[in-house]
Image (cartoon, rainbow, N blue to C red; front, side, top):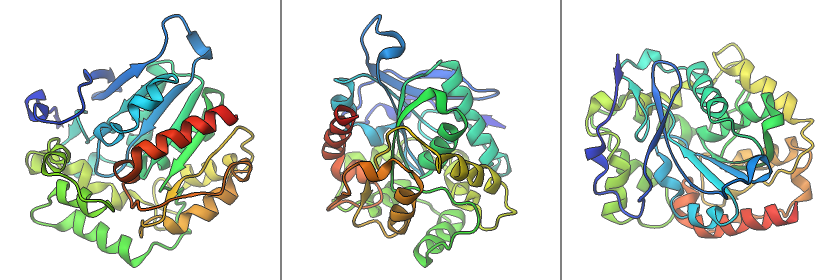
Length: 299
């Protein structure tokens, strides 16, 4: 069963006054916000495609959007099951293939080109895979606190504990989960904004299933998609800038391997984002946006 979420749940979300728009990606609508861009600029203008991960939504990019919008079009979708996007009520309906196909359809329906991919967590898994398979649409990559797990990787004890908690916790508080993944304290209204898309258990199937979709074996669903993406990205010739946070216990170990995988990543500054954790857009969004604009200028 497909569940839509009422806009009334988002009435008190602070500092995010963007009108939601929707793209039909099959039997579900994927929500997004858009700003920036110059009328008549066409394919030549930078399109910043900002992809969030588990269990956040486009709100996560609110500190970055204004700076990026000064340089081009900014498109920030909510993955299926998150934010204002539709969701399945049954956990079994969530698969890597479903999420990937929804994102691919979203990008194709909006006819996005000259994409500057900014991605974190599951936004990185899905976005990097799409960039690998539709490289003609993408101009630059900025992967942050993410990876491409093909089932051969070792997941940390911290990650396993997180995955178990998300899947089984009787009362899953999404707002507290996000707060615990930040280096800096979040205000109550911001924590409530992360709770907004998940008013009760009926809306949480997507959030609960994301960790379990990470391939743990090369035979798991999605492993082939990510392994193929790794192979393709090993020959990536366009600019790539890898930005990870120093205080993220979940993905920090992925940083050097990912930077080594992308041939052009070593052409960019070897930097970490200090005083930032897994949700680095919350901890250092303004700094990251400035670094991304500098990256555009360099390349």
